[in-house]
Length: 443
Ligand code: PMP
Image (tube, rainbow, N blue to C red):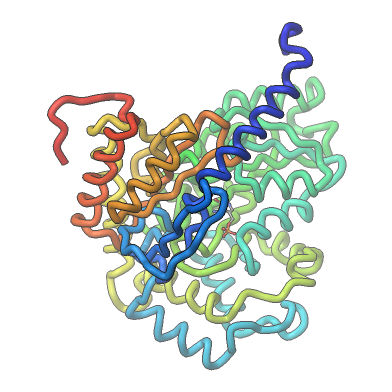
């Protein structure tokens, strides 16, 4: 905004782009590493060797067995499971990998209907609809719910699928400061005609979009306060539970359960099956009227091939385990385990002096690296010492807020976690990312 900086902003942006391109060319082996196993607590990472001054990559067939701190396999369902896997294999034999049809023309199996009933019951809404891809659930549904003349108010750190859905809708978009109910209220007040809070004029409708656990921050949404503001200004709430459903809450019902929010107070609940359920696809859960409306109007429902039947079976089976409907108490054990693992790992990292983002109970815990040039050393050194981590940088984060994003699973054993902590601690010392040094560090 400063006059002095006028004209410099494009140059700075250009430089940012220039440096990140040059940097990524040199660190490309840290991203997109091929994996040769299921995304379990340990994975086989295919070694890729940089040659020719890092400009090209050579791939070998050697694999490196690593503790997996990167997958969203929160409850451990993404590997062979004694209840889920045999049922998934049966469904593959019976239905094949694909329905080869859209939902309205032969693409709805008995499994799809069962999964939608189960998802609705699990999240506490009257009805649900499923889609073949989590990303497309946001990017295709938001434009069906709102269009020109509507207002979307989105948390600044919302996922790219939400951003693209909002842009595609044609609605006016405003952002509010990350997780700040008071700034949300300020934005709403600014946007609503004086004296009209109850009718939200001049907008046809207002949707406020938030996430249950922010994927790059590991932070829980301030949901109760945000819902209170939305109710005051008659705005609809849209909650993306990609990382929270199944992972948190006493019975796995996500951020609503953990924070004591009645699901009836959230208008649209969105989630993906790619994390806690170890499957593929996404869902929207809402009132019967909204789901019916989506079934008749959403192009991604009408024109896209339905979810793969084995993936649907995986969703059904894993939810049944979580609910204890498989006849065991493995679901409750997994939920207790992920909570214990996450809180242990987070507190140990903090004790070592790392800057860790996010809240207790969240299995997502970013370790701040800040300078993106620290990515290759962190990522390569961890890999060399048999720990696979995900590093994240611009454009997924601001340029100087690069981080390693740890995802903890119920399937990690205490030994896995301690080994990983020892490696991360050594690498942290090596590259100087313990920003809060402590004395007598001991895992
Ligand atoms: N929403 C959020 C908050 C996400 O983090 C992601 C991806 N991890 C998605 C939506 C897209 O889901 P999917 O990867 O299942 O397509």
